[in-house]
Image (tube, rainbow, N blue to C red; front, side, top):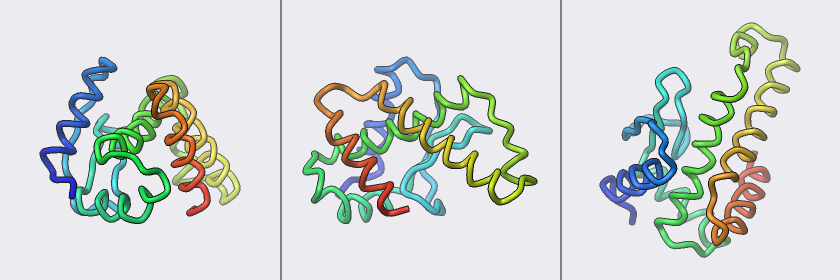
Length: 139
């Protein structure tokens, strides 16, 4: 079982390691285990959902609790890196046609995985790629 303080320490240490000035906070009302809020530059996490997700997915990755959280975190950091580099027109998500919304969401998701991967240490690359594959199968 991953506790709040352990997840916070993993996030804090990983952000410091990569010199990223992002906020993080617990949010027990997230629809996902972890998310990035582009408006506030904040990584939010729901520790109960992280533990549930880990129970479903980590049997295929076989990673430590810390590495599992890091893998999820690198994907969320990927959103930050994408929005920092690419100024997506987010009005499309609210006002665009269905095909425009889907196209932009797919691009943002692909970029988040790709940008997040640039920070993943070599010893976690295989697990990160496998996690990406698992998550893509789920959606």
